[in-house]
Length: 412
Image (cartoon, rainbow, N blue to C red; front, side, top):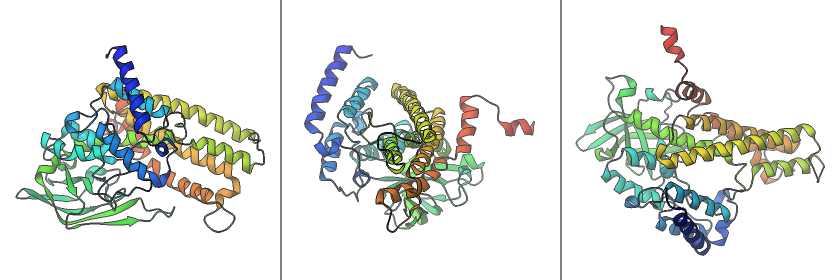
């Protein structure tokens, strides 16, 4: 443990640095159009977003606990907590959203070679490369180990053929971390490898998938004799399943954050969705002082209690991970509950809007009302992405509760 006096000095230095370097507009609630994903194709609706990213990346504070050797902040777990607290104090926006930070980077730090870390991690820290994930395939979703995209070694490169689906933001990404089959003669889990390659590689194409909400965050991704350097195989040949499971723990922790969207007003600077629910309920139910519907009041109160409990549990899990424990099977608990919480949030918001939640387009409906309806539809996918709720419950049963595998019991 660092001395209390040292930590207090760090807090004062951090507070002074943030006050001097965090632009004014970066201390306001995040606007969807201003979320920074970085990458070669990055655009900045708000010029101060770019300034904020550059300043935080220079300090390594986009990834505060990552080693300084690779561009990270090198902070201790206690210092990282203080940084988070001081950012929350001034309602500072996150400088960068990145699958490289939330998923790939931690896996590279654990399983990558020094050369792989030196090549890729500094670019993740600085937001220079935007990553996407190549996991699911048309016939391999929950049964991910049945994937068929093949990679065949040809000299110092792998030739890749196959396709992926539900590849989030593949049309906007620069690089992909991808699961490929490198051995078809062994049990399916044992013949998978984890490889990285550039999305501008000849033979790689993407096709956005339009959702019922009208948005297209997911893509089909196709590989036709695409080539990837063998040096970008992470974790060794045919060891991809172990890498995949570890990365999924990080992904599920990230997705669980959906459940925090309504409880971050005092922590992350975002406007509470539940505040919006209450305002909508009071406005559309004809009472400007309180929510007149006792049933709706009760649902909102219960949701606030559950959200607060979830936020505290998530914070505890985060602090445990900063102590070197990393994500584990509890990530499935957080992912499952956080996604169900987010779905409840939108159900409540629609209930509060009443008939105004029925609009899709045209007169009589405000843009934010139409947006809520679409987001409600989008929230239904929360229980599928990153592993279905059924998969999470199986993981919780086996890895957290220690219950026996029902399939093995049946076979006995």
